[in-house]
Image (cartoon, rainbow, N blue to C red; front, side, top):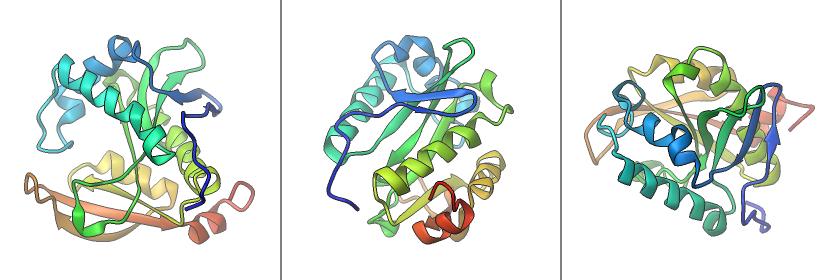
Length: 192
């Protein structure tokens, strides 16, 4: 990884989305609702939802990631109406020690935003940021084996299946996919 880091999230724009730093107001703009939705959370950790306090703690911790790591999660909002869509970004997957050291790309969207291609669009921008701005050499993504929607996003991003394993904290089966900076550059020669 390069020595320079970002103390705060930069703004990234795609055709339909703005990726920006998470803000306190995102909690009530959709983050708390999203983390409390059983359908959104069914493949996350042990599948349990989070209450507003837990979602606020998640938000606080993710805001600190940028200062501590130089990368983190982006809030995703619609350019059309400014609505909070969800989040996408980069994190250290400490929940799966066997793959460390690693940086994971992940996403979580509010259910009304599913099926519109937002996860792929936002994750493409975050992946480019990871390789070009954050200087990462390799990025992984981890999904519950039954989460086929995330599997499709991973495939569209060019991540290839690497292994199946079990998360020690809750015993759920996951698939780990990965892409190297060289693979990314071959797939995205203009931006990589």
